[in-house]
Image 1 (cartoon, rainbow, N blue to C red):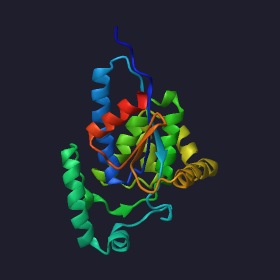
Image 2 (cartoon, one colour):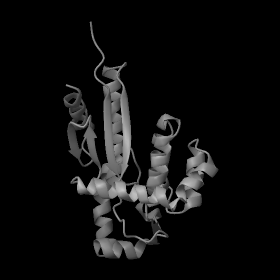
Image 3 (tube, rainbow, N blue to C red):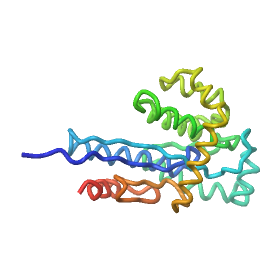
Length: 221
């Protein structure tokens, strides 16, 4: 007689302006689909944790061209790097539109939105919010540093607009998210995505689905 495996919790440290995190999300989804096919009664919980790639950016964001200049030495070098990322994205079923990004956002408020989504209705809106934030930035060219944009995204995903606005404008909430970011770094996380399975097995980077599936098996063994 087969038995259900132990519940599986996947903690994902990521940033919504990290293309490898978007690709990693697709790989997680593929691995989880395989896991659920093998364990129909198995419980899987995903929790998102904040990591800002650019925590020092002004809250109003900054010009993308100047950002690329500072980070990569200019658009041409960025184009070379993004060509490799775009190819990895296509392999994961994503068409990343780097040219559509006109302004580089500070992601503190976006992370606050994710945290809020995880805290209400048993977190059932969280995946939709994370997915929509990635799509807004990497596909639609939306400025996700803008509170009105974030509230519109929240509403699309089933969250109440007024409550979301209250959360995103509350200094204590933003400070808490910033503290969580700092705490993750103090634990040794220096890059994202970073995944932890059942607090036992960790993976760094957008590993292939089969690697993630293997980590899941080890985590519940």
